[in-house]
Image 1 (tube, rainbow, N blue to C red):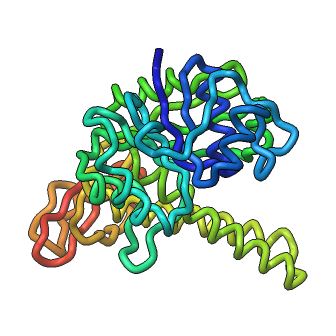
Image 2 (cartoon, one colour):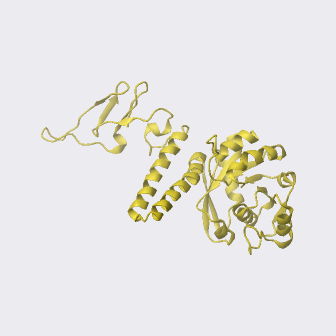
Image 3 (cartoon, rainbow, N blue to C red):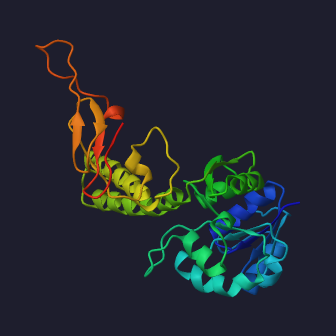
Length: 301
């Protein structure tokens, strides 16, 4: 049986512990307060965060972090993001050497601007292959009520992502796998900023046009940020060559059919026309040429 430790007994940590138990895992919750541990173990409920919700028999709680971590295949971290570093420094020596650390947290660390997975790697001294992220448009109370929900399980090691997927897959909770840890973490954090901006627009009495513009432009900027922070992204035919590179972003050449590129900052074009009287045809976006800034190579697609 898969064994899971969940550090944090807030609404989301408790709800995800329920998901793991419903998927057949043995789950131990770590809580700071003994009174809450007693309520979970004897009353089968978390009265502070999910009152009235009955917890599965596969969930138990303890105030001892070593007991919670013992033998855990997955160690789920769901504490406030700004307390992660201090908490994990205390817990790291207690964790099994082969456990997969799973982040349920959203946000970036103040002062370092590091994502939660980066903090985990640094403090626990584990490779990226042992760190996974679970994120999605999930409300803890709806998940605890076993209403249908989906999520993304991300890890640079696809096999690890699939193992975690199997550990939390239930009839009502559908996890999908992804190797884009950066994109999943940024999406979970940045969307909150966009949501705040939309709320401000609502408070100002602005209409749906303004809110839709904020959402659309916010998505575009989130995409750019994700690409800029993921220089090792696996190349895909759907993306221009510069999207998979850490080099400076290029500018686009005129929309005509390109030939082979020349030196950096310049491109030679082979104009194409079906008759002398007709202008050159514009190329498709996939065949346009991207010119790199000086000092880098240009490329045509």
